[in-house]
Length: 114
Length: 115
Image 1: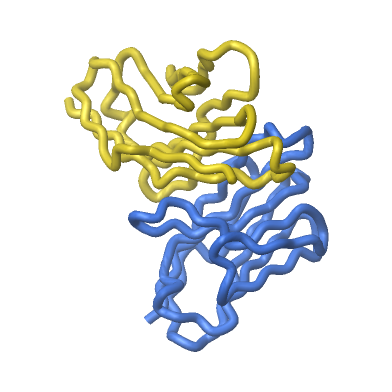
Image 2: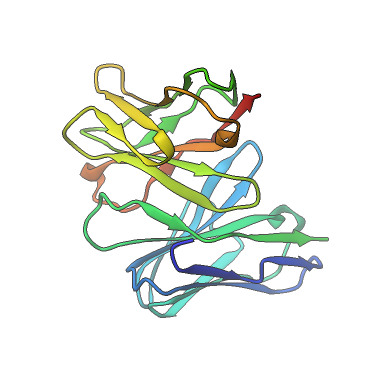
């Protein structure tokens, strides 16, 4: 999976608890992304980062925050998890040679909020 | 704004037959187009992309895609399907005129290849 790891791979949590998902890359790529995948919706962008401490919102950012203090790590936090955030979360990276870069995806984190 | 559509939720094909997975797009200028494949319980994997040049693009695992500007399409094709090709396929588009590195993904098409 192109030097991308996600942790944890599976998590079950209760409504109202905070949750942090981690994405780690060894490719030194500039761009990192968090998506969620739900049946019938495909992939939806939550947040993305274009450099250390540089982040921006995607189309479904409500209820999520992100941080990127190092090139290799991109954290996604659910401040107070809700059942609607039950999903599979994917991290992706892309390079710096231009806008034509394809994305490389991590293995995913399956999150269940009870 | 950029957008992409995959008109079929599911495509069924017999092993050995040719397959086509459809994708249409909308951008203001010339698009960057991508295909990805997702096997069960895995992340998406890049298959191929069209940036410029030859309208027929060849990618991994024997797949190819044809860019058709007049029909705003980028259909994924393979001459002879394998059972192992069964997976979820995503088309994505990026509009370089928007100055963004963010692609828009289609909802995905499930390809089922029957033995």
